[in-house]
Length: 218
Ligand code: ADP
Ligand code: MG
Image 1 (cartoon, rainbow, N blue to C red):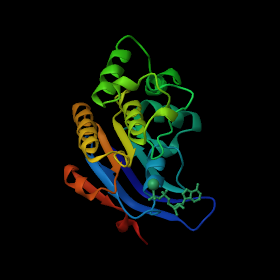
Image 2: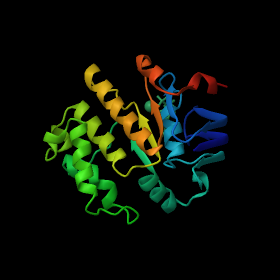
Image 3: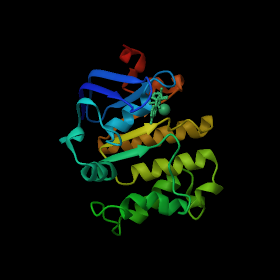
């Protein structure tokens, strides 16, 4: 589960302030994060993932108090325990789709690229409808294909937490439903928490709960 207490954050520059007195997300919960642009949705995901650290307060994910880890521990925690689907995908242009999906396994000793991983990766990319694009590099993919590659990379290590920043933002209506179904199926199978930023209000009824950043105004 995720537990946030007395969180305060601001960037080194600018007026933006984020203050969350208390926020908990239970194991297996599917939560949509909504709110106007610039309200801090991406910042919250980055804080939970330990990409940035709070000024005050605590953030824990499962047994890990993220805010207490060293930089090195946070990186390892992020790669092994969290599947992050970035708003801008953050795929590596010099790697093809399949190598992008496998990448987390190549950058930490904590994940082992053994015999069962590649077939599982193949099934995943096929499920996502990009099975025919494995050898392509990201600069030869559509936005929707990049998005699906980024989702596969996040899901492959079977993390207990998926943080997804507008994961269906670049998909056509048909793929949107399909990809959301897959995201939900994978999270349900593994009891994974899904925290997904979305602007798509038609999708909200599929989540267990909605966190609205309007509530964090102060
Ligand atoms: P959202 O994802 O809800 O659109 P963000 O979390 O990206 O919002 O940003 C929240 C606020 O923080 C915005 O005002 C944005 O301009 C500001 N911000 C984001 N990143 C930085 C940064 N690295 N330095 C200073 N300000 C930032
Ligand atoms: Mg954002």
